[in-house]
Image (cartoon, rainbow, N blue to C red):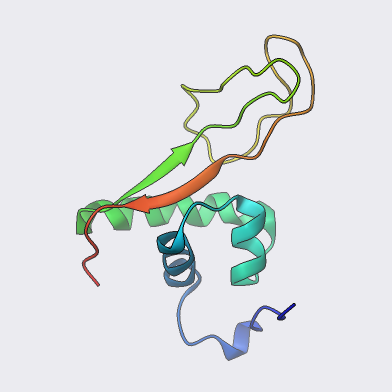
Length: 108
């Protein structure tokens, strides 16, 4: 397994790195954190800003909502980039991670 680049070895910004990874296909915050070399809890912050940048280029960040693994409840209306703590229907903490990917024509 390759080690993520250290901050001083970067040739592109974190958001540029996230964009490149998201163009390859759907990824969870955990996948993005490993690929880019940032803490998982920082990914949501960067995705919010990346979403604004993508809109200017005609692209969009697509969020595939998490699902409850116990009762299959889908968090369809949720726009947050973090995983919910528990299911509102059955209260189970077993919730899948949301998936993210980029759609649209790239302006880069």
